[in-house]
Length: 119
Image (cartoon, rainbow, N blue to C red; front, top):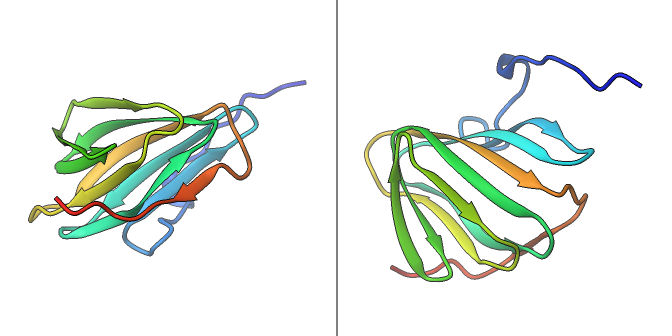
């Protein structure tokens, strides 16, 4: 059974209009998304019980807080977040951020919301 497919990001929309994840693939083994946040936007802190999440920064600068530790990342940086680690994505800067997100192994429901950290 063939699994190869090609998509174009322009055929998909960000979850919140001009921000959030834009999933190019959801399952069957992983999720793959382009993520964008405008200046001073953030994404609710959460963790995954089974999936691990990776972010690769394409453009801009962003703070990703993992279990209370602030990681300030910019273009070319990569961060791996393991299952159970609470992570919060915040763009307190004056320019948009664009990054790739990959989550695996795929689980239909695996996101648990947590309180946003104060930092």
